[in-house]
Every structure is written in structure tokens, then in C-alpha cells.
Image (tube, rainbow, N blue to C red; front, side):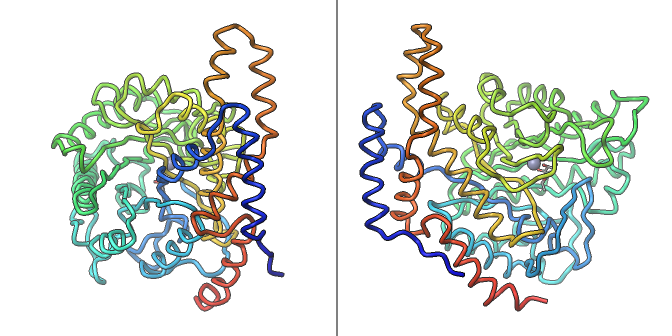
Amino acid sequence: MPTSAPTAKQVEDAYALARDRYALLGVDTEAALSRLAQIPISLHCWQGDDVGGFESPDAELGGGLAVTGNYPGKARNADELRKDLDKAYSLIPGKHRLNLHAIYAEAGGQKVERNKLRPEHFSRWRDWAKQNSHGIDFNPTCFSHPLADSGFTLSHADPKVRQFWIEHCIVSRQIGEYFGRELGTPCVTNIWIPDGYKDSPADRKAPRERLRDALDQVLATKIDPKYHLDAVEAKLFGIGSESYVVGSHEFYLGYAVTRQVLLCLDAGHFHPTETIADKITSALLYVPELLLHVSRGVRWDSDHVVTLTDDLQATMQEIVRSGSLDRVHIGLDFFDGSINRIGAWVIGTRNALRALLMALLEPIQQLRDLEQAEKFGERLSLLEELKGLPFGAVWDYHCLRQNVPVGFAYTNDLAAYEANELSKRS
Ligand code: RNT
Ligand code: ZN
């Protein structure tokens, strides 16, 4: 059953009312929308094929990552993945980036070991990105590999295994620099490793010392931040690393501060009641910039599709209220194989943008003034009233102006794509 979208007139009329309503609070909706249009979200390529990559058709997902669901039509090669991404971008307002993992290399059917990957194995991604004005971010893939089967990579006790992963991370930074130079926008290369123990270790210290030293080797060559930025991602626990993760939050916070690299905060990587929102202004006092992995944990780091939760809104509010939009790189990190995978990208990205818009529509000065005057009851009243303001009309207008479907109507496009494309993939 196709859903009909509101007419342009309906959207414009509703927007005009909303604009005036926000103006009463001193909020300029036009300014909010032009700011929103400039914020790139880095879509994670791995939602399109359940974190499989293209090294081999029967690659098994490792590192404690799990994707459930077998919705038909997942991308089987890079051309299909790019086609699916094109579809997703066409349903999301604005210009956005792509976050690529090393296992998405295209080596023309050759088997290239991960420590031997070169920029040329990513030239087709570069061509596509250039044609479509997408910036690219990058990730070494330190999982789904025989040398990661023990559960240890950069902190492995065996220097030979460690060396392999050090080399993989070094070539990944070179590939990141290549993307940055070629595309004229810095590539954020994010290092996440799965290293840890299922059960309580006798030695928590030595792997951390090895990880620190391995990272220092990886980062030894400085790269111009005009082209490339390094990020490190912490985690509390994973499947198979429930008792101990080498790269914990404290480990990486200390590492990022002392080495002045970016800290990556993944919304699913903390205790279930802990949110990343309150970490932003603390971390930004001491690290140059942040990378976010916007995700949604349900009971655990389950990487559910991002919905418009209080958590997400609090995170975007913190970035906007603290004036940190230029120092926070927003990436997504979830994987759901149980629904249309392109729909998952579209839902998650549109929600990240909607939360940003809600934050941009706050009467921040008025809230601050109330706070300064110790009018905490009024501060609470205003925050609660804001929740009922017609932000949806502003969002719809943004979609209309950016030439993407308004509201639920994008599901018609997804259904057509499923019929014409996804259903033809075996
Ligand atoms: C794993 C981390 C990491 C991965 C991606 C695929 O817990 O969140 O960011 O999800 O590298
Ligand atoms: Zn992550």
C-alpha cells in the first residue's frame, strides 16, 4: 500500500506556522536549517552487508560482533553496496560521508593480505566518492581473520601476530591519508580492536602495555591533519570479552589525551545506564576532537538501528549547546540484518539528523539566562514545553527543500528498490 506524501503546499504552510512559533522564542528556523544542511553524517558501509566485507564470500564475522536476521537482498559485492548506498543517500537530506572498513577492499579477485593493502585497492571507492561528493572515513579491520581468532590483535603476546596487526593499522592510515588527499576532506581513521578475555584474567596490565606500545608504533608517522585524523575507540565488554577488554575507556581516554588523537565514543560501549552525552564536554577539554559512533544498545551493545531516543537527543544537544559541531565527527555504527538494510541506514541517519535539528532549534540563550538567574523551575518548564513545539514541520520542510521524500513516503522508494533490485539477488 503506497503512502502518499503531503503536498508541497501542506509542508510549506505547516512550516510557516512553525517558523513563527519558534520565532516567539527567539529561534531562527532558517539559521537552524542552513546549519543542519552543512553537517555530514558518516554512514557505515557495514550496515549494507552485515559486516561481511569482500575478502571471501564465506567470511565469518569475528571479534565478538554479531548480526542477526537474514532479510533478503544483502549486497554481495562492492558495486551492489555502492548502489545500495546511493539509494540510501537519495532518501536522506544533505551531503554525507561514507565510513569504510578495510575488508571492503577491491583487489580485483586477488587475495591481498591485510598488512599489504594499498590505496589502489580502494581506487574504485575513491572514484565513486569523488563523483558523488562523499568524504570517506576509514577503519582497519582487526577481526574476522585467522590471526584474530585467539581474541587478541594489537595486544597479542606473540610479537609476530602483533606485528601483523601493527602493519595492518599502518597501511590503513596510509589509505586514510590517500582518501583525505584525493577527496579534499580529512579522513578519520578509527582503530577498534576486540582484544579481551571471556573470563577474569590473571594479568590485566601486560596486554595494556603492549597495546600502548603497538599504538605508538602505528601512529609513529605523523600525517597532516588536513588529510587525515586518527581516532581510537574504547569498549566496556564484548561477546567473548565479558570480563576484560584491553582497550577500556580509561585506557583510551588516557591514550587520546597523551597522544592528542581523537577519542571515539560509541554509544553502545558503556554501562547500560551510562550515556555518552555527558562525556562530550569533558573529553573535549583534553582531546583535539571527537568521533561518535551513534548506535543504540538494547540491554547490551546490541547495535540496534538508531531511533529518536532521549539518549540521542541529549548527545546532539550537548554538541550543539557547547558549540562543538566543528570538533565532533558524527558516524553511525549499527547493523541489522532483519529489516531492509537500506531502510536501516535511512531510519538511523534521518534520526541522527532529526535529533540535531531539535538541538539546533533550542532557545539556548534563554535557557542559559534562566540557569544563570537560578530559575531552575522555569528552565525545566521551557525544556518540557520545547518537546511539544512543531519541530516535525521544520524537518518536513527541510526534506522538501533538500529534495528527498517527506516523512514516511520514503518507504515507497524502498519498496520499489526492493522489487526492482534486492529481490533479484539470490
Ligand atoms: C565494535 C565497535 C566497532 C565496530 C565496527 C564494525 O564494538 O563498535 O566500531 O562496530 O568497527
Ligand atoms: Zn563502534
